[in-house]
Length: 308
Image 1 (tube, rainbow, N blue to C red):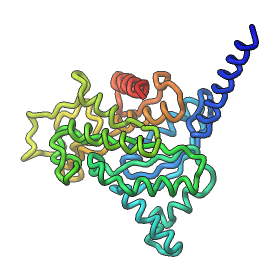
Image 2: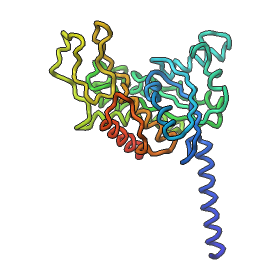
Image 3: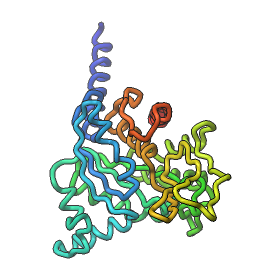
Image 4: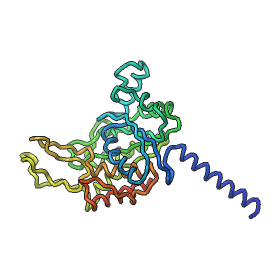
């Protein structure tokens, strides 16, 4: 090999090595890496998506350390408002909503590889609701964890039979699951572009399932919704949202949050991206999810991850 070829080979090797260093610094696990420190800023949707993440990591021999600043129904604006209160007065209880602690107290404790953020699902299709709070929150995170990689959790659209979908620009709600997904996806991608972050595309995975001819949820038109009788429920086969359930004598409807199948799908997407490990090798599944459906959900997760 002549000197020019040797030099080119050395440059290529150096650039590859630098890339690996940068990726490691960004916080994503390299293939074979066994430990990841993950901090989640979110609400019930992040709790849903990460519910089975510890089991997935354990099965694959990974060590996962999770920190949480999650409050049900909370938006980026609300999380930022707590930061402002805590920074103005460290003793103000209004700045310590996370079981009596502030975000600084939680996030500033130790070193984190990944920090995730997301928008409140109802506001997710309204891009204007993200700003300036997302930018301020990202800057604040960087002051506390300068080496952490910030990742955007793309939440999902509500089930197709929801009575109301998320708000879009102008304050009007989306007219369908499809519209909520499309507009929330655009908003999340714009956010990721502006803050130079990667996306956990759970919303895309949910939509793939929703549109599947075989596995997509179809409302039960034969059920008597006006006069239901306990313990009867509509057919909700292959739903990945909670849907209808009985709470004592009341029929409750939750088309928004994930059930075990949806939590499993979200966890697969998170695990596959954060640990850089193929989800097709996963064998764990929640007890309430059939093996056939679990296998399909692993296929969907792998498909969505491969497009990132």
